[in-house]
Image (tube, rainbow, N blue to C red; front, side):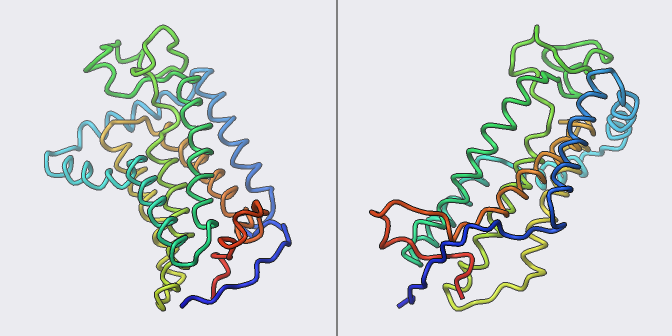
Length: 255
């Protein structure tokens, strides 16, 4: 029988690395700067060069290997996996708190990634060889407001941003879940979960020509910013309604 633990009510933010808000500000400044540069028709040569190189170095075997590994960044399955881990840990600890990170992660990604895609209205590199069949030079700019939304949702890369956020949530839940079964996950293994899949997704998404390089970089910047916000939240200490008092146990500090 799992022993309940007292829930602290100190709402101090949890530490992240690098510490401080300066790095978060740097991520936002970089994202805004990148977006402004693209809106001013800058960096198109870099995007075009990377896309052309990928098109010329994509044999069939490499294409399918990249496509399989790119599945690591599918947002819906990752959301369901994170939610499932949260529910399982909630049942194990008799606490509603493990469900909170997947819920907040979903809200954050829903309110940021999608709206940014719609607002910037950028097409993918493949938009010149399939619908909407734009001239190659017209596939690079932002703000294709005259196109249906389904053709202009490339910036930022949702695959990359979602991978960073959801693998961060999964890593946050896996360690206490393992402890609830009497197991211990090495910190290095948790770091690998957080780092390797997003890097694989960034590389394969760009290599497959599904996103411009700057789309992937923007997804990286946005994903890191959201991930840091999620890991700052003192999940064990958030006040909950009185009716949840029996399901109010901590999980990030679960021994």
